[in-house]
Image (tube, rainbow, N blue to C red; front, side, top):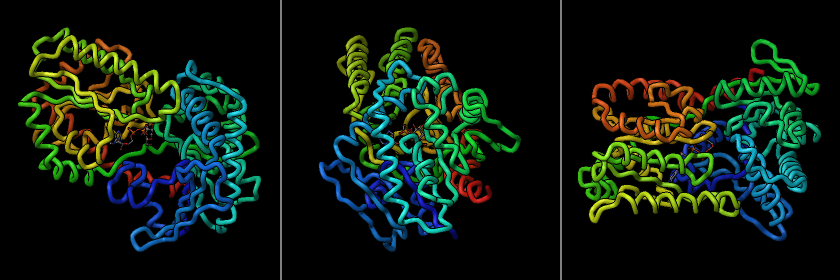
Length: 461
Ligand code: ADQ
Protein backbone atom coordinates (compact mmCIF):
# COMPACT_ATOMS: atom_id res chain seq x y z
CA UNK A 1 0.00 0.00 0.00
CA UNK A 2 1.24 3.51 -0.85
CA UNK A 3 2.35 5.63 2.07
CA UNK A 4 -0.02 8.40 3.10
CA UNK A 5 1.44 11.65 4.36
CA UNK A 6 -0.99 13.70 6.40
CA UNK A 7 -0.26 17.37 6.94
CA UNK A 8 -2.39 19.33 9.39
CA UNK A 9 -1.90 22.45 11.48
CA UNK A 10 -1.54 20.45 14.65
CA UNK A 11 -0.27 16.94 15.21
CA UNK A 12 -2.28 15.56 18.13
CA UNK A 13 -0.13 13.95 20.83
CA UNK A 14 -0.49 10.33 19.79
CA UNK A 15 -0.43 8.68 23.21
CA UNK A 16 -2.93 11.07 24.65
CA UNK A 17 -5.16 10.61 21.64
CA UNK A 18 -5.01 6.86 21.85
CA UNK A 19 -5.66 6.65 25.56
CA UNK A 20 -8.32 9.29 26.06
CA UNK A 21 -9.69 9.69 22.57
CA UNK A 22 -9.29 13.31 23.51
CA UNK A 23 -9.33 14.86 20.07
CA UNK A 24 -12.41 13.18 18.77
CA UNK A 25 -13.46 11.68 15.50
CA UNK A 26 -10.99 13.40 13.24
CA UNK A 27 -7.94 12.20 15.15
CA UNK A 28 -9.33 8.67 15.06
CA UNK A 29 -9.75 8.84 11.30
CA UNK A 30 -6.27 10.21 10.82
CA UNK A 31 -4.69 7.61 13.10
CA UNK A 32 -6.43 4.77 11.26
CA UNK A 33 -5.32 6.13 7.89
CA UNK A 34 -1.75 6.38 9.12
CA UNK A 35 -1.72 2.96 10.73
CA UNK A 36 -3.04 1.31 7.61
CA UNK A 37 -0.39 2.82 5.35
CA UNK A 38 2.63 3.05 7.71
CA UNK A 39 2.24 6.73 7.07
CA UNK A 40 3.67 10.01 8.23
CA UNK A 41 1.89 12.82 10.10
CA UNK A 42 3.41 16.27 9.77
CA UNK A 43 2.42 19.50 11.54
CA UNK A 44 2.90 21.93 14.39
CA UNK A 45 4.02 20.44 17.70
CA UNK A 46 1.87 22.83 19.76
CA UNK A 47 5.04 24.45 21.13
CA UNK A 48 5.83 28.14 20.79
CA UNK A 49 9.54 28.96 21.17
CA UNK A 50 11.62 32.10 20.69
CA UNK A 51 14.27 30.13 18.83
CA UNK A 52 12.68 27.02 17.36
CA UNK A 53 14.82 23.97 16.75
CA UNK A 54 16.24 24.15 13.21
CA UNK A 55 15.11 20.70 12.12
CA UNK A 56 11.75 19.05 12.78
CA UNK A 57 11.28 16.55 15.62
CA UNK A 58 10.81 13.04 14.29
CA UNK A 59 9.07 10.40 16.42
CA UNK A 60 9.77 6.92 15.10
CA UNK A 61 6.99 4.37 14.59
CA UNK A 62 6.08 2.17 17.55
CA UNK A 63 4.25 -1.16 17.68
CA UNK A 64 0.97 0.54 18.59
CA UNK A 65 1.46 3.41 16.20
CA UNK A 66 3.32 2.15 13.14
CA UNK A 67 3.78 5.59 11.60
CA UNK A 68 6.11 8.54 11.98
CA UNK A 69 5.12 11.89 13.41
CA UNK A 70 7.17 14.89 12.42
CA UNK A 71 6.58 18.16 14.20
CA UNK A 72 7.83 21.72 13.96
CA UNK A 73 7.58 24.55 16.50
CA UNK A 74 6.31 28.07 15.88
CA UNK A 75 7.92 31.33 17.03
CA UNK A 76 5.74 33.73 19.03
CA UNK A 77 5.49 35.97 15.91
CA UNK A 78 4.38 33.01 13.77
CA UNK A 79 1.89 31.87 16.37
CA UNK A 80 0.42 35.32 16.53
CA UNK A 81 0.38 36.10 12.78
CA UNK A 82 -0.31 32.69 11.24
CA UNK A 83 -2.44 30.93 13.87
CA UNK A 84 -4.21 33.55 15.98
CA UNK A 85 -4.08 36.12 13.19
CA UNK A 86 -4.62 34.91 9.65
CA UNK A 87 -6.13 31.48 10.39
CA UNK A 88 -8.39 32.37 13.30
CA UNK A 89 -9.18 36.09 12.91
CA UNK A 90 -9.36 36.28 9.13
CA UNK A 91 -10.02 32.93 7.48
CA UNK A 92 -12.20 31.35 10.19
CA UNK A 93 -14.76 34.20 10.39
CA UNK A 94 -15.02 34.54 6.59
CA UNK A 95 -15.41 30.78 6.08
CA UNK A 96 -18.26 30.98 8.63
CA UNK A 97 -19.94 33.96 6.94
CA UNK A 98 -18.79 36.43 9.62
CA UNK A 99 -17.08 38.97 7.39
CA UNK A 100 -17.95 41.55 10.08
CA UNK A 101 -15.50 39.83 12.44
CA UNK A 102 -12.59 39.68 9.98
CA UNK A 103 -9.66 41.64 11.43
CA UNK A 104 -7.48 42.04 8.37
CA UNK A 105 -3.78 42.87 8.42
CA UNK A 106 -1.67 42.11 5.35
CA UNK A 107 1.29 41.30 7.62
CA UNK A 108 -0.67 38.30 8.96
CA UNK A 109 -1.06 36.98 5.42
CA UNK A 110 2.68 37.27 4.89
CA UNK A 111 3.29 35.32 8.11
CA UNK A 112 0.72 32.71 7.03
CA UNK A 113 2.53 32.31 3.72
CA UNK A 114 5.87 32.05 5.51
CA UNK A 115 4.65 29.34 7.88
CA UNK A 116 3.05 27.36 5.02
CA UNK A 117 6.33 27.64 3.08
CA UNK A 118 8.32 26.58 6.14
CA UNK A 119 6.10 23.52 6.69
CA UNK A 120 6.63 22.57 3.05
CA UNK A 121 10.39 23.06 3.04
CA UNK A 122 10.72 20.84 6.13
CA UNK A 123 8.40 18.22 4.67
CA UNK A 124 9.82 17.91 1.16
CA UNK A 125 13.08 16.12 2.09
CA UNK A 126 10.99 13.44 3.86
CA UNK A 127 8.78 12.65 0.86
CA UNK A 128 9.02 9.51 -1.25
CA UNK A 129 8.13 9.29 -4.90
CA UNK A 130 4.77 7.56 -4.63
CA UNK A 131 3.53 9.07 -1.34
CA UNK A 132 -0.03 10.35 -1.36
CA UNK A 133 -0.13 13.76 0.32
CA UNK A 134 -3.31 14.69 2.22
CA UNK A 135 -3.49 18.28 3.48
CA UNK A 136 -6.08 19.24 6.10
CA UNK A 137 -7.97 22.44 6.56
CA UNK A 138 -7.81 26.18 6.21
CA UNK A 139 -4.47 26.63 7.94
CA UNK A 140 -2.63 25.20 4.96
CA UNK A 141 -4.21 26.70 1.87
CA UNK A 142 -0.91 28.02 0.46
CA UNK A 143 0.88 24.69 0.88
CA UNK A 144 -0.21 23.12 -2.47
CA UNK A 145 1.47 25.90 -4.47
CA UNK A 146 4.60 25.70 -2.35
CA UNK A 147 4.78 21.93 -2.79
CA UNK A 148 4.56 22.24 -6.58
CA UNK A 149 7.13 25.05 -6.61
CA UNK A 150 9.47 22.74 -4.71
CA UNK A 151 9.09 20.26 -7.58
CA UNK A 152 6.78 17.80 -5.82
CA UNK A 153 4.94 15.70 -8.43
CA UNK A 154 3.02 13.47 -5.97
CA UNK A 155 -0.73 13.33 -5.80
CA UNK A 156 -1.96 16.06 -3.44
CA UNK A 157 -5.39 16.10 -1.79
CA UNK A 158 -6.87 18.83 0.38
CA UNK A 159 -9.88 18.51 2.68
CA UNK A 160 -11.65 21.59 4.02
CA UNK A 161 -13.26 20.87 7.41
CA UNK A 162 -15.12 24.20 7.53
CA UNK A 163 -17.87 25.41 5.22
CA UNK A 164 -16.87 26.99 1.92
CA UNK A 165 -18.97 30.18 1.86
CA UNK A 166 -20.71 31.71 -1.12
CA UNK A 167 -18.35 33.22 -3.68
CA UNK A 168 -19.35 36.78 -2.80
CA UNK A 169 -18.47 36.16 0.83
CA UNK A 170 -15.19 34.39 0.07
CA UNK A 171 -14.19 37.26 -2.21
CA UNK A 172 -14.27 39.64 0.78
CA UNK A 173 -10.90 38.10 1.68
CA UNK A 174 -8.27 40.35 0.16
CA UNK A 175 -6.18 37.27 -0.67
CA UNK A 176 -8.94 35.10 -2.12
CA UNK A 177 -7.25 34.63 -5.50
CA UNK A 178 -3.89 33.62 -4.04
CA UNK A 179 -5.58 31.09 -1.76
CA UNK A 180 -7.72 29.45 -4.43
CA UNK A 181 -5.07 29.50 -7.13
CA UNK A 182 -2.83 27.68 -4.65
CA UNK A 183 -5.53 25.10 -3.92
CA UNK A 184 -5.87 24.46 -7.64
CA UNK A 185 -2.41 22.83 -7.54
CA UNK A 186 -4.07 19.89 -5.77
CA UNK A 187 -5.33 16.85 -7.63
CA UNK A 188 -8.36 16.57 -5.38
CA UNK A 189 -10.19 19.05 -3.16
CA UNK A 190 -12.74 17.67 -0.69
CA UNK A 191 -15.69 19.49 0.88
CA UNK A 192 -18.18 18.50 3.58
CA UNK A 193 -21.48 19.08 1.73
CA UNK A 194 -22.92 19.58 -1.75
CA UNK A 195 -23.65 23.20 -0.74
CA UNK A 196 -19.94 23.84 -0.13
CA UNK A 197 -19.05 22.27 -3.46
CA UNK A 198 -21.67 24.40 -5.25
CA UNK A 199 -20.26 27.55 -3.67
CA UNK A 200 -16.77 26.54 -4.79
CA UNK A 201 -18.00 25.84 -8.33
CA UNK A 202 -19.56 29.27 -8.36
CA UNK A 203 -16.27 30.82 -7.26
CA UNK A 204 -14.34 28.94 -9.95
CA UNK A 205 -16.69 29.95 -12.75
CA UNK A 206 -17.55 33.50 -11.72
CA UNK A 207 -14.54 34.77 -9.79
CA UNK A 208 -11.68 32.73 -11.22
CA UNK A 209 -12.93 32.57 -14.81
CA UNK A 210 -12.40 28.78 -14.73
CA UNK A 211 -14.52 25.91 -15.94
CA UNK A 212 -16.44 23.12 -14.28
CA UNK A 213 -16.81 20.02 -16.45
CA UNK A 214 -18.91 16.95 -15.80
CA UNK A 215 -17.56 14.31 -13.38
CA UNK A 216 -16.39 16.98 -10.95
CA UNK A 217 -13.46 17.92 -13.20
CA UNK A 218 -12.32 21.52 -12.86
CA UNK A 219 -10.03 23.81 -14.80
CA UNK A 220 -8.77 27.08 -13.35
CA UNK A 221 -5.57 29.09 -13.02
CA UNK A 222 -4.03 26.86 -15.68
CA UNK A 223 -4.54 23.70 -13.62
CA UNK A 224 -6.86 20.71 -13.85
CA UNK A 225 -8.16 19.02 -10.72
CA UNK A 226 -11.22 17.43 -9.16
CA UNK A 227 -13.42 18.64 -6.32
CA UNK A 228 -15.89 16.36 -4.56
CA UNK A 229 -18.02 15.96 -1.45
CA UNK A 230 -16.81 13.70 1.39
CA UNK A 231 -19.03 14.20 4.47
CA UNK A 232 -16.92 13.49 7.55
CA UNK A 233 -18.38 11.19 10.17
CA UNK A 234 -17.72 9.10 13.28
CA UNK A 235 -17.35 5.44 14.20
CA UNK A 236 -20.96 4.93 15.35
CA UNK A 237 -20.50 1.44 16.82
CA UNK A 238 -17.47 2.44 18.88
CA UNK A 239 -19.24 5.56 20.15
CA UNK A 240 -22.39 3.58 20.98
CA UNK A 241 -20.26 1.09 22.92
CA UNK A 242 -18.58 3.88 24.89
CA UNK A 243 -21.99 5.42 25.65
CA UNK A 244 -23.41 2.10 26.92
CA UNK A 245 -20.42 1.49 29.16
CA UNK A 246 -20.26 5.03 30.43
CA UNK A 247 -23.95 5.08 31.33
CA UNK A 248 -23.07 2.71 34.20
CA UNK A 249 -20.15 4.86 35.40
CA UNK A 250 -19.86 6.91 38.55
CA UNK A 251 -20.28 10.22 36.77
CA UNK A 252 -23.40 8.99 34.99
CA UNK A 253 -24.87 7.95 38.32
CA UNK A 254 -24.06 11.31 39.85
CA UNK A 255 -25.69 13.06 36.90
CA UNK A 256 -28.81 10.90 37.12
CA UNK A 257 -29.15 11.48 40.84
CA UNK A 258 -28.68 15.22 40.51
CA UNK A 259 -31.44 15.42 37.92
CA UNK A 260 -33.93 13.82 40.28
CA UNK A 261 -36.12 12.56 37.43
CA UNK A 262 -35.96 15.75 35.34
CA UNK A 263 -35.44 15.56 31.58
CA UNK A 264 -31.94 16.55 30.46
CA UNK A 265 -31.27 18.70 27.42
CA UNK A 266 -27.65 18.95 26.30
CA UNK A 267 -25.34 21.08 24.17
CA UNK A 268 -21.64 20.25 23.60
CA UNK A 269 -19.43 22.63 21.69
CA UNK A 270 -16.11 24.41 21.71
CA UNK A 271 -16.85 27.94 22.89
CA UNK A 272 -16.94 29.57 19.45
CA UNK A 273 -19.15 32.29 17.98
CA UNK A 274 -19.99 30.00 15.06
CA UNK A 275 -21.78 27.58 17.38
CA UNK A 276 -24.82 29.79 18.03
CA UNK A 277 -24.66 29.57 21.81
CA UNK A 278 -26.34 32.89 22.70
CA UNK A 279 -29.23 32.08 20.35
CA UNK A 280 -29.44 28.64 21.96
CA UNK A 281 -29.66 30.13 25.45
CA UNK A 282 -32.40 32.45 24.21
CA UNK A 283 -34.35 29.53 22.76
CA UNK A 284 -34.17 27.78 26.14
CA UNK A 285 -35.39 30.95 27.83
CA UNK A 286 -38.26 31.08 25.33
CA UNK A 287 -39.16 27.48 26.19
CA UNK A 288 -39.38 28.31 29.89
CA UNK A 289 -41.30 31.52 29.21
CA UNK A 290 -43.80 30.16 26.73
CA UNK A 291 -44.26 26.68 28.25
CA UNK A 292 -43.99 27.17 32.02
CA UNK A 293 -44.86 23.52 32.62
CA UNK A 294 -41.20 22.80 31.83
CA UNK A 295 -39.99 24.79 34.81
CA UNK A 296 -38.60 22.43 37.45
CA UNK A 297 -39.01 19.56 34.97
CA UNK A 298 -36.14 20.23 32.55
CA UNK A 299 -32.43 20.90 33.00
CA UNK A 300 -30.25 22.21 30.22
CA UNK A 301 -26.56 21.26 30.42
CA UNK A 302 -24.29 23.26 28.12
CA UNK A 303 -20.69 22.04 27.98
CA UNK A 304 -18.50 24.62 26.24
CA UNK A 305 -14.75 24.49 26.92
CA UNK A 306 -12.86 27.69 26.08
CA UNK A 307 -11.07 27.74 22.76
CA UNK A 308 -8.81 30.29 21.03
CA UNK A 309 -8.67 32.28 24.23
CA UNK A 310 -6.14 34.76 22.85
CA UNK A 311 -8.53 35.93 20.12
CA UNK A 312 -10.56 38.97 21.28
CA UNK A 313 -13.83 37.89 19.62
CA UNK A 314 -13.78 34.74 21.79
CA UNK A 315 -13.48 36.84 24.94
CA UNK A 316 -16.53 38.82 23.87
CA UNK A 317 -18.72 35.79 23.22
CA UNK A 318 -17.63 34.40 26.56
CA UNK A 319 -18.82 37.40 28.50
CA UNK A 320 -22.08 37.50 26.52
CA UNK A 321 -22.77 33.89 27.50
CA UNK A 322 -21.90 34.53 31.12
CA UNK A 323 -24.41 37.39 31.11
CA UNK A 324 -27.16 35.35 29.47
CA UNK A 325 -26.69 32.27 31.64
CA UNK A 326 -26.74 34.47 34.75
CA UNK A 327 -29.93 36.15 33.60
CA UNK A 328 -31.73 32.89 32.80
CA UNK A 329 -30.74 31.26 36.07
CA UNK A 330 -31.54 34.46 37.97
CA UNK A 331 -35.01 34.62 36.39
CA UNK A 332 -36.06 31.00 36.75
CA UNK A 333 -33.99 29.21 39.41
CA UNK A 334 -35.65 27.97 42.56
CA UNK A 335 -34.04 26.84 45.79
CA UNK A 336 -33.92 23.28 44.51
CA UNK A 337 -33.69 23.76 40.71
CA UNK A 338 -31.16 25.47 38.46
CA UNK A 339 -32.44 25.46 34.88
CA UNK A 340 -29.11 25.96 33.11
CA UNK A 341 -25.85 24.26 34.00
CA UNK A 342 -23.13 26.00 32.05
CA UNK A 343 -19.72 24.30 32.17
CA UNK A 344 -16.53 25.58 30.55
CA UNK A 345 -14.56 22.36 30.78
CA UNK A 346 -14.16 19.56 28.26
CA UNK A 347 -15.21 16.04 29.21
CA UNK A 348 -13.33 12.83 28.57
CA UNK A 349 -14.73 11.25 25.45
CA UNK A 350 -16.31 8.31 27.22
CA UNK A 351 -17.95 10.49 29.84
CA UNK A 352 -19.29 12.69 27.07
CA UNK A 353 -20.78 9.64 25.35
CA UNK A 354 -22.59 8.70 28.58
CA UNK A 355 -23.92 12.23 29.06
CA UNK A 356 -25.25 12.27 25.50
CA UNK A 357 -26.98 8.92 26.05
CA UNK A 358 -28.71 10.23 29.11
CA UNK A 359 -30.05 13.36 27.38
CA UNK A 360 -33.64 13.47 26.17
CA UNK A 361 -32.82 16.28 23.71
CA UNK A 362 -29.61 17.55 22.10
CA UNK A 363 -29.30 21.10 20.84
CA UNK A 364 -26.86 21.25 17.96
CA UNK A 365 -27.61 24.70 16.67
CA UNK A 366 -24.55 26.35 15.09
CA UNK A 367 -24.94 29.47 12.96
CA UNK A 368 -22.50 27.76 10.56
CA UNK A 369 -20.58 24.52 10.86
CA UNK A 370 -18.63 22.45 8.36
CA UNK A 371 -20.23 19.24 9.61
CA UNK A 372 -20.62 19.07 13.43
CA UNK A 373 -19.66 15.68 14.73
CA UNK A 374 -21.54 16.11 17.99
CA UNK A 375 -24.81 15.74 16.04
CA UNK A 376 -23.70 12.30 14.82
CA UNK A 377 -22.25 11.33 18.20
CA UNK A 378 -25.54 12.16 19.90
CA UNK A 379 -27.46 9.85 17.58
CA UNK A 380 -24.92 7.03 18.01
CA UNK A 381 -25.04 7.34 21.81
CA UNK A 382 -28.79 6.78 22.15
CA UNK A 383 -30.55 3.79 23.67
CA UNK A 384 -32.45 2.25 20.71
CA UNK A 385 -35.36 1.40 23.03
CA UNK A 386 -35.69 4.96 24.35
CA UNK A 387 -33.85 7.36 22.05
CA UNK A 388 -33.68 11.12 22.49
CA UNK A 389 -34.39 13.80 19.93
CA UNK A 390 -31.82 15.80 17.95
CA UNK A 391 -32.64 19.46 17.35
CA UNK A 392 -30.31 20.47 14.53
CA UNK A 393 -29.48 23.73 12.80
CA UNK A 394 -30.07 23.84 9.07
CA UNK A 395 -26.66 25.58 8.89
CA UNK A 396 -24.68 22.60 10.19
CA UNK A 397 -23.22 20.44 7.42
CA UNK A 398 -24.77 17.48 9.24
CA UNK A 399 -28.27 18.74 8.38
CA UNK A 400 -27.69 17.69 4.79
CA UNK A 401 -27.61 14.05 5.88
CA UNK A 402 -29.54 13.98 9.17
CA UNK A 403 -32.91 14.90 7.72
CA UNK A 404 -34.99 13.15 10.40
CA UNK A 405 -33.73 15.50 13.10
CA UNK A 406 -35.91 18.47 14.04
CA UNK A 407 -34.33 21.03 11.73
CA UNK A 408 -34.34 24.64 12.91
CA UNK A 409 -33.04 28.06 11.94
CA UNK A 410 -31.10 29.07 15.07
CA UNK A 411 -31.48 32.77 14.30
CA UNK A 412 -35.20 32.34 14.99
CA UNK A 413 -34.82 31.54 18.68
CA UNK A 414 -38.57 31.44 19.28
CA UNK A 415 -39.02 28.83 16.60
CA UNK A 416 -36.13 26.82 18.08
CA UNK A 417 -37.85 27.08 21.47
CA UNK A 418 -40.99 25.61 19.85
CA UNK A 419 -38.89 22.74 18.44
CA UNK A 420 -37.58 22.08 21.96
CA UNK A 421 -41.12 21.80 23.24
CA UNK A 422 -41.95 19.41 20.40
CA UNK A 423 -38.85 17.35 21.17
CA UNK A 424 -39.68 17.13 24.87
CA UNK A 425 -43.21 15.93 24.17
CA UNK A 426 -42.48 13.59 21.25
CA UNK A 427 -43.97 10.09 21.48
CA UNK A 428 -41.72 7.06 21.91
CA UNK A 429 -42.83 5.70 18.51
CA UNK A 430 -41.86 8.88 16.69
CA UNK A 431 -38.55 9.09 18.54
CA UNK A 432 -37.71 5.52 17.58
CA UNK A 433 -38.69 6.02 13.98
CA UNK A 434 -36.59 9.16 13.59
CA UNK A 435 -33.64 7.65 15.45
CA UNK A 436 -33.57 4.46 13.33
CA UNK A 437 -33.46 6.47 10.14
CA UNK A 438 -30.72 8.75 11.48
CA UNK A 439 -28.62 5.86 12.76
CA UNK A 440 -28.92 4.03 9.45
CA UNK A 441 -27.61 7.12 7.61
CA UNK A 442 -24.64 7.40 9.97
CA UNK A 443 -23.83 3.71 9.67
CA UNK A 444 -23.82 3.93 5.88
CA UNK A 445 -21.45 6.91 5.74
CA UNK A 446 -19.14 6.39 8.71
CA UNK A 447 -15.61 7.61 9.33
CA UNK A 448 -14.05 4.61 7.59
CA UNK A 449 -16.11 5.29 4.47
CA UNK A 450 -15.00 8.93 4.65
CA UNK A 451 -11.28 8.29 4.71
CA UNK A 452 -11.39 5.37 2.28
CA UNK A 453 -13.42 7.24 -0.30
CA UNK A 454 -11.10 10.26 -0.12
CA UNK A 455 -7.97 8.15 -0.53
CA UNK A 456 -9.56 6.12 -3.36
CA UNK A 457 -10.53 9.30 -5.21
CA UNK A 458 -7.04 10.74 -4.72
CA UNK A 459 -5.45 7.60 -6.12
CA UNK A 460 -7.90 7.37 -8.98
CA UNK A 461 -7.31 10.87 -10.30
P1 ADQ B 1 -15.12 21.52 15.53
O1 ADQ B 1 -15.53 22.93 15.24
O2 ADQ B 1 -14.21 21.35 16.68
O3 ADQ B 1 -14.48 20.83 14.24
P2 ADQ B 1 -17.16 19.31 15.95
O4 ADQ B 1 -17.22 18.59 14.68
O5 ADQ B 1 -18.50 19.44 16.57
O6 ADQ B 1 -16.54 20.76 15.79
O7 ADQ B 1 -16.35 18.62 17.17
C1 ADQ B 1 -15.17 18.04 17.22
C2 ADQ B 1 -15.05 16.97 18.35
O8 ADQ B 1 -14.73 17.53 19.63
C3 ADQ B 1 -16.30 16.11 18.54
O9 ADQ B 1 -15.89 14.78 18.44
C4 ADQ B 1 -16.77 16.41 19.98
O10 ADQ B 1 -17.28 15.31 20.68
C5 ADQ B 1 -15.54 16.92 20.65
N1 ADQ B 1 -15.95 17.90 21.65
C6 ADQ B 1 -16.56 19.08 21.42
N2 ADQ B 1 -16.82 19.69 22.59
C7 ADQ B 1 -16.39 18.86 23.57
C8 ADQ B 1 -16.40 18.92 24.99
N3 ADQ B 1 -16.94 19.94 25.60
N4 ADQ B 1 -15.86 17.90 25.68
C9 ADQ B 1 -15.34 16.85 25.04
N5 ADQ B 1 -15.32 16.74 23.70
C10 ADQ B 1 -15.84 17.73 22.98
C11 ADQ B 1 -14.19 21.18 12.86
C12 ADQ B 1 -15.34 21.84 12.08
C13 ADQ B 1 -16.59 20.96 12.15
C14 ADQ B 1 -16.26 19.57 11.60
C15 ADQ B 1 -15.01 19.00 12.27
C16 ADQ B 1 -14.55 17.72 11.58
O11 ADQ B 1 -15.63 23.14 12.61
O12 ADQ B 1 -17.64 21.54 11.39
O13 ADQ B 1 -17.35 18.71 11.85
O14 ADQ B 1 -13.94 19.91 12.20
O15 ADQ B 1 -14.38 17.93 10.21
